[in-house]
Image (cartoon, rainbow, N blue to C red):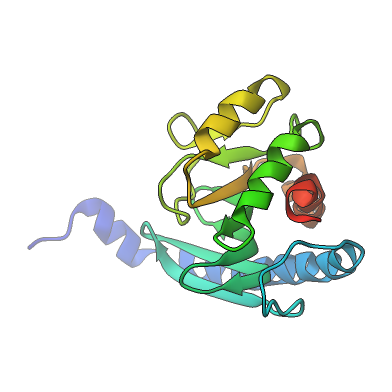
Length: 202
């Protein structure tokens, strides 16, 4: 099988991988800043957490193949079992966007759903989206993938949530966002956490 001219150009590129090697530590630094900013915030609230939840548990992950694109993420807070999930993921997905997402499954799921609907005005109109995929690990946005949480949609959101065994609330941030360009993306993560706290607190 012959290489295409575009593939030959990629094979010959001496800049991309050295640039990637410079960018990856900056992403890690961003995730560490998010982790640090979350620590004080989370301790100030009574979270509705699963049994055996460890408030200090976190995980930094780096990979190359999220739909063929590199990625790095932080899970904090972090609780995962086969049937119960309670986590906030800050994901940087090369070629796509950043995602700040609350992931909930099992455990107190009924309470989380009730909190979202009963406290909807506190969550709505804050650039938060309900993810519609039947997989928690889908990270695209747009029609068919996400539903924007605006004030007039509480009944629609309730209908979507009714029979779901899990749900995910997310904010999607393009790399062109001024906060990203100015090195303030960690503030957007913190804003997102604060926006979804009404869902995850007692």
